[in-house]
Length: 628
Image 1 (cartoon, rainbow, N blue to C red):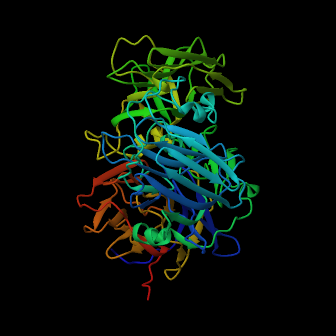
Image 2: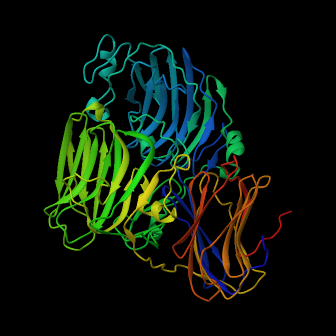
Image 3: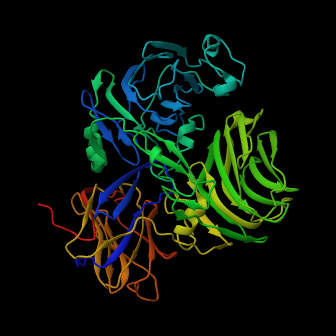
């Protein structure tokens, strides 16, 4: 690394993530007139504390513990504190493909739910009488003896049994009738056809705390676990975790897995949204010591909606497709599509499944928006809006939770409906189509116009496609293969909160960069200097990340433990021309790394076995100082 200090430059630092789930803003005063704002993204985050000492875990992912050994009996207890209404607290399942054993806790709509499957069918039980997202501590205790399960949340007790025999939809047999009285099938859809009879819980898979995996990790969670399918990790505090009577040192596991993610204490900060951090009239949503900006009604993206969103232009013969690495099975979907067109008909988004007729289609017909969901032998059609081919931007949002549907156009009142779907409401698909189908024979024509903000279950596919570089021929492990035949529009890069480094001795020190499993950095710069260190963060052993200017070109250098990898921009001319240049750095898959400068993407694949970037210490901006 060339360690020449950076000078005579102005900077804007920000981060963008494919799953914007959280944010910390740190303001550092450089002078009376300027400040630098650095946004650290937190995805699938959770804040936790070990027993009797609170700690905030600001990881962007999750923690992994050994399997819960509870074949015949077992106990789990913990305390949680959050103000966020949805999140996966913990999850484990059988590691054998022949068994479907499952255990999980999740928060849905502010209430705690318990999942259990001993091989005879999944059960989902609302376990808290009151909401647990009120920012106070709540005690949770689970005791299980064979099929008998008792969950205590504070002073509220819920008891239930897992099925003893095969169950069919709303029909139940034997002693499961008592259990069904405690479950609203209309709300939960929790009883399914399942073969088997079991009193043993075989969980040889790992116990996940706070989430289910890295971006595009194999979606091994079952469809009944909605927060898993929607990639909604738990964000809040956890303490006093005890499994089978043994206290668990979560902090110790965190230090082994993501050392930069642990912080002392568990305090609830003041409101973030009162300072209006979200730009361009986007919506600010409060979270646990964080805020989230909903940019979907705007033409911007990023943590504070300050970056131009990608715009895909389609001419009626073009489309984008995303081929998943494995078949997907979902019982919950969250979809956003922003579009602009003069044509009354056209496909916006659809799923397809080669081995079945399941499909979800969102399209325009006669200037109205339609959603058709077909699962098994049943389907439901919803219609909303009119005159949507008026050459103005419109935002379409669709969500499903089992048989409950919600469909909305712009700020119109949402349409809510209940659908009787087949196959227990489980949608199967392998391919996502945007703007049109690849194959002929479909009766819905291709879309003609512009598309933005294509979100499907937490992933912004247009942004992923644009930042991934040239289309892939393999899944790179777990990432989808995305192919785009349309044209991306040229983006503007508005400058926000610039600061000038007037001395080679000036630097800014920030908290450690959270890049353990994914890297998401965005900044702009301009300079006349040909060489200089832009940012640097050291890590454990040989791990590090750096961005520097070398002979007028941006170099991105990192080491995951298998040796340093250097990525250089593909610009034909040098970048020290005194003009603003936009830089994005990402990791769309575990071993795929991208560097984008002014929307020109360079991608490399790391060859080693390591997939984690274990950073520690200070993130230096503008200059590196060797730490003692």
